[in-house]
Length: 90
Image 1 (cartoon, one colour):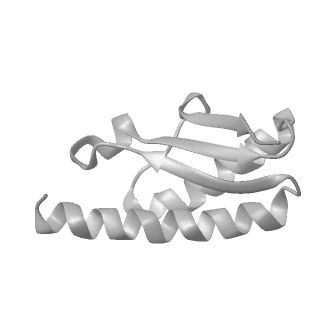
Image 2 (image 1 turned 135 degrees about the vertical axis):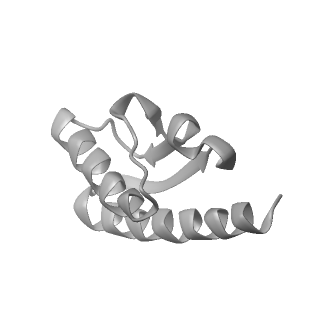
């Protein structure tokens, strides 16, 4: 991993952590998130998985997508709703 990739990974983790905290405030049954991506092709490969205690409504999913994109914009990156996965936890 190059220095540039390490720096990008650190920034991505910081921004997703901030987005996670915002989503906890905005969506009551949101628990946490995880991500995976190739740092060489971040825009094309980023997948964010949201872990929730209940199914998200369409409006909650829109809030999540919008919130993630606000934070990811700082990296000149966006995520499509199709790259946001929701996993239900008991």
